[in-house]
Image 1 (tube, helix red, strand yellow):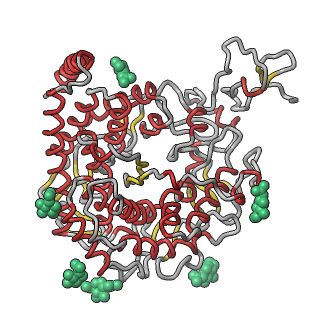
Image 2 (image 1 turned 30 degrees about the vertical axis):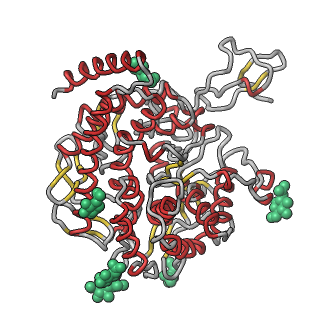
Image 3 (image 1 turned 180 degrees about the vertical axis):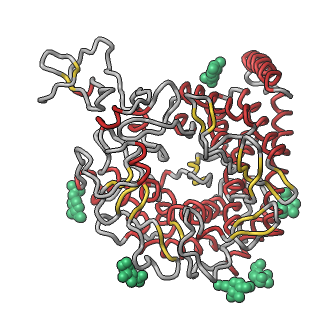
Length: 543
Ligand SMILES: *[C@@H]1O[C@H](CO)[C@@H](O)[C@H](O)[C@H]1NC(C)=O
Ligand SMILES: *[C@@H]1O[C@H](CO)[C@@H](O)[C@H](O)[C@H]1NC(C)=O
Ligand SMILES: *[C@@H]1O[C@H](CO)[C@@H](O)[C@H](O)[C@H]1NC(C)=O
Ligand SMILES: *[C@@H]1O[C@H](CO)[C@@H](O)[C@H](O)[C@H]1NC(C)=O
Ligand SMILES: *[C@@H]1O[C@H](CO)[C@@H](O)[C@H](O)[C@H]1NC(C)=O
Ligand SMILES: *[C@@H]1O[C@H](CO)[C@@H](O)[C@H](O)[C@H]1NC(C)=O
């Protein structure tokens, strides 16, 4: 079907369905039900095609190479762009199987789940001489294990009880123990890399990323609550608090920093994690852009789901539409797309089977129940089957303009992409319980018993708010490229179109104010405006 027809059809279906829904809310539209049943089968087949091929050609190694039907032991390659310190004697940790556990339960395949648990409990060991990225290992391995454990022991859902004896929790705890040496730094910010057998290596890099130090709390917190051992949560929370204390006056975080000193190394601000404060600072016309502390250069694909989660459904809807248009144009989403110029980024033209558009579609459907999103999900599913399905699994796309494939099926295709598409058409899993989905798509039940107050030691009073960003001791190549001298002025001299990302409008359009909070941020200098004695917002130099 051509895109044109698709669009027209979508609009018609939308109008018809909306009318029907309006007419009889209690009587579910049978067209929608039929669609859901058909689609969940289609997505189920997709998951098993990926899973069965992994089990056949790659397991117990980490990930499948679907074109050559072989494997890669990628756990120590993740995040390791230069492929340094690769282990010589590491045969994988069944990563894709671990990542598939929660999906198997959501698909209701208890038999296969139990088979996987017994293999893992008998054969998996993390006592291996492998240097892994703490962030990746946490979201994929620890998150996969903790989530599957919680689902398997949840008495409120349909999963088989009795045969499961907390095996996954035992494995998770062993892995969590191996993470702890990474946090042994003066700042509490963890090293980005850890050797699973020997801890932090000699001469290990002290540069870590915002996500690597700030987003360990869900998995490690859950591990503490489940085992009763507070160490994991305490370590992750301390790192998170420390990181938040290092934010700029605009509530922005840089990208990388030094774990020994807490100084920022890379100033450009990505938006990996959900901080509603930062979101507010960055919103611009419904589409968020990758920004540096000074100016934005390249628009970057942003996870619309976080806008749904902070409650801005309208903004999420319009930015989702923009991304879906790009998907429609190419058949999948390129890693980067220059929205201003409506063109591909010259190098980042790949699509590694990422979940974000499916994920956003799922969240938007949950938030609005607008049946249009079911059509979007179908379009995504059909494109994945058309462009990325091969005999040996699903392959990443190396270049979306040619659809040349890459020999790699990432584990998140099973933990996220397939799961979100499935949940779009069958949300029965979500009926009896609220869940938080981790960044890797592993659901964690939201438990009332876990809403305890944080221990006193973690209160913000113990952390200083850094008023201005310190001068960097060293700057990465990327920072220099974005912002040659790391100052606002030098950035302003470039001839880029400067619609400053730091700009925040004053609360009132007539610029009147009662307090500084009513004032925004100046677009050209990126400085916070304040309320004058005469009750006007402005850039008063001496306040
Ligand atoms: C990895 O596999 C090789 C070849 O099968 C074997 O010799 C080696 O002992 C294995 N290493 C580990 C850590 O199991
Ligand atoms: C569970 O998964 C296994 C392995 O893919 C498959 O053979 C089996 O048919 C699945 N069972 C169900 C109920 O889907
Ligand atoms: C553990 O691995 C061995 C060797 O591959 C295999 O024979 C055994 O069945 C595995 N255990 C389980 C419970 O699958
Ligand atoms: C650590 O780096 C220093 C300086 O480069 C070097 O002299 C030393 O041998 C290194 N140590 C290890 C264990 O690699
Ligand atoms: C999303 O935006 C479109 C217009 O772009 C609008 O027609 C539709 O009603 C919106 N849906 C929701 C749920 O906000
Ligand atoms: C700060 O932490 C110390 C222990 O590290 C604790 O004794 C103190 O009460 C904390 N202060 C606040 C305000 O929480």
